[in-house]
Image 1 (tube, rainbow, N blue to C red):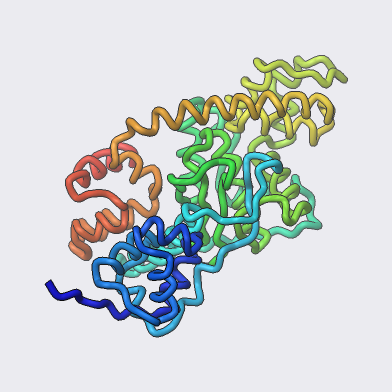
Image 2: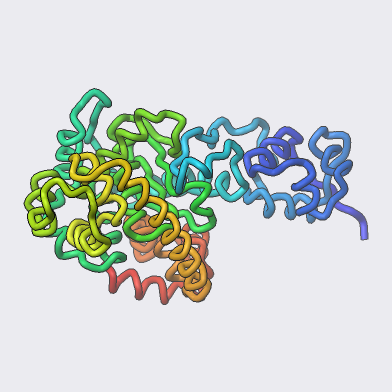
Length: 386
């Protein structure tokens, strides 16, 4: 059978591989091609066959048509900031999975805007703004007002997953698209944001604990208020610290925290807090135990030494919980993962367009990364949650 050559633009092969975070050696190994072959394809000295190009498209997670563009796309530049589990995990190399999650978040934002146009809807503008020279308490109050959250509402969200879902819905109602990355390790990124208007994006890591994801939602929303975005780490220590403090103050408003039964009954001047006390604050306000302790530290109700000791235990617990979640994750049905990743807003836009016959079931499969056979289950779960 005669070999059919593909005619991709060589520069697109180089661009797609680098954006996927792969070296020449790694890409050649995954494609089961010789290094010299891939080098020749990228230089234009030779061409891959159509099946070989399809394999590269699958590896780089790009549509086949991408490789026939005349010029390299200018978007999807990798952002430099990261929010990771700890500073010790910092690395400056982006994995292929992180590169993919970034591209996918950009794609979903653009798709969401297109789907809104199909429904003749206009995105809700996220107008909350802040600056680093403002009081943390003022910015947190402004964010809470923008989200429309009240202490009584938080107190009613006693279950971890319920609290996360409700905070997520509030952010989406305020004009932020929220997504969950499914293929990232926590050591690489707990979350990132895309500061494009309208419809900025916040992405959290599905492998994180629900309370941790809530904190990341608010941390990234603060970045958006500062008219900034990215994958967060310690590159800009001042801004990262500010966003952390605002997220803590948003979850644990000063007056409400000081008037809580746990704090009122605590011995004045004692920097030590029991796990039970921190757990009670976590349940009441919806933040993690560590977030509660950070807030107590900010309000000078504990010491840095006590927090540092507790932090080591928190990290140990996080790793144990992550292992358990990874085990459970393998048993989650595809439609559950798809719905959790896409979130209420994006899923709603897709289903509404399907119901109005503006898109097909095959389109839904592409948008939500789910097989058509699982669509009925997804629609059922979405209706119940709606």
